[in-house]
Length: 209
Image (cartoon, rainbow, N blue to C red):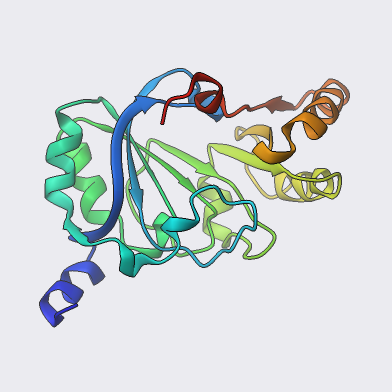
């Protein structure tokens, strides 16, 4: 990467774009609503069950001008979801400012493990044991989405729920490869602890991106 491109990436004016697509939001609080997804490459959180491991190496995804991404998004949607990888590895101030300037709602899905940036209408925090969120992420979270891979994850979910604000919506979501085993446990847990809600990866059931 030449120095000029690197400078633009550092400022968030270019981002390592993995993919962008218009679809139906499949998880969490906005399940069933349309959104334009922007998936940014780069992640070192290292979830062993990650279903987009190809996003981890940012070098595989060419730096793309954020303004071009915004132009694409505004053709399709009133809401954009920026995800990854781990999107907060990059400055998201510029792209979110441009999205807001075009009257597009901005949502993010993040582990919260990197410094906060961007202007957000909705902040979905999904903490991971391997690299915990920074304090600012807990304060910003509108939604806490905890992935349940085994029984120990219920304890971790409760620990994380204690750190977010009272208005934050709380979700438990079965890890896809363990859904047959963990979904019944989640149902039982939510019935006993009604502050939680169930999130399912409905886009996978619908066979859409």
